[in-house]
Length: 586
Image 1: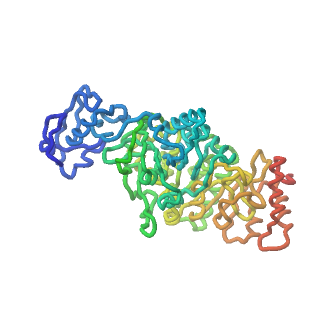
Image 2: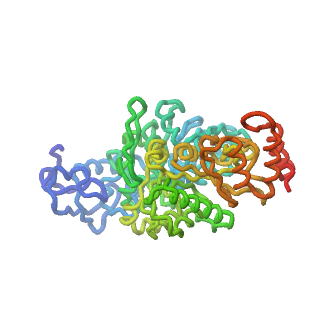
Image 3: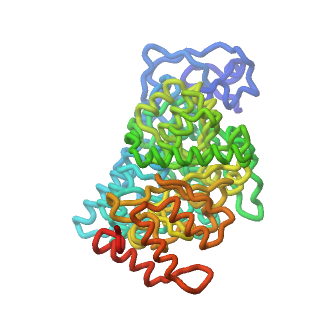
């Protein structure tokens, strides 16, 4: 540290070095505590500092060198980017080197054809304003006859991202996952090239350059510091990889999220082969990385201040079919415990978002045979927090807090408690096959349809129209100690069977499925040959109205190890597509 005079306080640095310093707003002595003594007095500062007036004067412990450097940056009105809850004095260290932009100014930087990596995981931690402004800009350009579309990477599905950009016809390419209705319509109309991809597979492809360069990474943060340290918000997802590889970074500094979130995130990235190292996670609660994400600060080209909550939806009431499926899965796991295939301490659970997941967790919570357990998943939803609050869940590891605003407020109101029970990881860790296998995860995912051989379609309606994408289901299905797919036995009010002769699209092959569960029962497919699997699925899982039809198809094939007649199998689908019912439905 140079011997400088602090312009703000007229005290020299040598005197300041006798005091304990603070280089961010919430961790005293974060950068300098190894040099400076504990218990040093505070410094009192008042007046107009870098465009923000502290009146009355604020008392805090401060690094004079940082203050002096920021004072020279006073052309930025740093008060506009103050994270909610930070003391005014923190302005002297926050946002030291970064331009403060409006959402429109940030969107103006992005050009036609750029690849934009968007942070967030579902609606959790998704960007809120820059992509919305980008969509408005695209509308205006299209009205003038000027083409504009960008390539979007990311699992974010906030309406300000996929909905807004799809409605503006501003997306040319999308990967790896989405849940937006307008974007889905554009994909199925072949206006957007969508690449469906396992979530754990995306980062290696990005790192080796197979998906091309990233022009901009856009994500939200609770705090940004002068050395490029960034405190993320309610998700991690792919942001660490996006930020490291992007040429330029735009950050939404969201004051809705508290600035004392440090300790929630576990930032850990993997190198490419042959330099890849083992991932030292042996329990879901193991933390192995950094609490802050770090980027090259020179890549941060702008900060946009926001104060907008996540738009996570509250869970719908559990319907009777989902309740029965949840109870069947819970009984399956109890039976596995009694058979000695699951230890008395149980195993970590992975489950997605939706009614079946809610019903499953409710059934596990209410069963006296199931001990408190951990979650190792890609998503934490409302029912997981309920399980933490009732001591049914000991710890939850995921990539995002995909919860409703009231539940997120509950977490933020008692952060010290929840920081002991939760951690958020990058999706390449939350979904990594190595960790899933080591922990012995029980993976539970949903299916659109299952064929009698055990193949699963989880993405395409009728084999042609994308619903959402494969997401992380394949990561867990292939690598879980126990792999379960759940689905109602019928769709469209009972007019279409979810158990079919042959899937119209296959995402998970028969080799990756162990159990299929519907409201009618459980099909244990382990160790069974094709014909045994088929009979078990028909007898245990198919709706009674369709069992005779499926058995007729099965017994009608005369030759081959697998009794498949593709013409007959897809006639089953074809008639359901034209009449709304599967062929010969009783």
